[in-house]
Length: 424
Image (cartoon, rainbow, N blue to C red; front, side, top):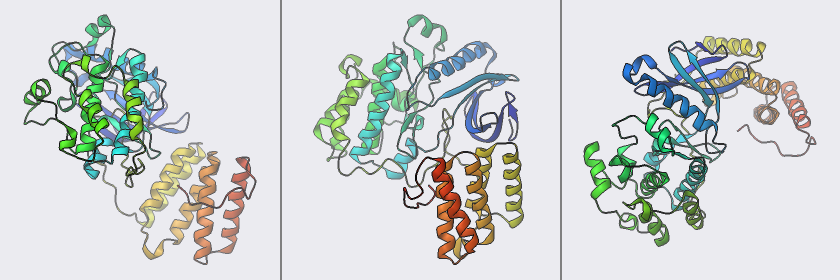
């Protein structure tokens, strides 16, 4: 796979996001609908020949399983297809910060924030379990917090249908599915895995959010799984005394060795978490520094290197690229190119240099052409305000204000409906 390659005669690959043992995920663009997407590939030639049939069935099942979960906490599935020897799923591109990174940055999350994240995961699990699906691999790397604070549950790739016949046909024989750090005791022992296993994994994640470390740690996977099976359940208040007793008790029950001793359902856990959502020390869920990751990406902590700034010639090329995209009515992709260009221009005292002004005008116009009138209006207003403060060209200031008013009218708002705001 390489950037610029076209998939399914409509999706253009833009850059790789992550790679796992048998697959990889790319950010891409749907040329037909003018929107960013994530494309997950199963590289069949990298799958052992005797496992390809099973791997292909599981990959297709992932697409079907995720597609039928109509829930805001589950990324949407758009398409499923074949590209050469590879299978691919086209899914919603999810920006935000992976929970694992958020925990690493914050060490221990405020009680209210941790409870809110766990409650949103419970909402997804309730929908999945009612559809006879168990995730089986919940972990912080598979949970994304979007810039608006919505928690997305990613990668239903090892989700098993609860029906025993389907599960026995599709589950890889002799393998334990799931991550050792968050695996339920019955799952570690190779026993039947039901909704209670997801609740156990959620308990491990909640413990890590509150305590800074998962409940059990060991030098290797076999020892870690034995600890889940045999070691006493840790008490969160021994690691963090300010955790409310009722929340500590819920966490203890989630980590019960016997599935029968855990809460009865994800819905019940959601209700039990509700009193802790408004704990005063909880900040918003939106991280100040959001890292862009994409749905169903294999665990991957690297970022593509981006140069800190571009030369004037680079900016000319980016503008030309955006112009060509716009001519082909790929407005959203053109806006993405221009936004990247704006970020790469050196700021400092030359924040409103000619290059930046030109790029920002182009970006605002492209957003307007794309029909994204709200963002276009904010872009025009912000540019007019910045130009006015720096004694910029008055004709351009007036034109930006005129375009901002036009955007308001397109949204059905009176011209004086709201105060100018900067672009988000």
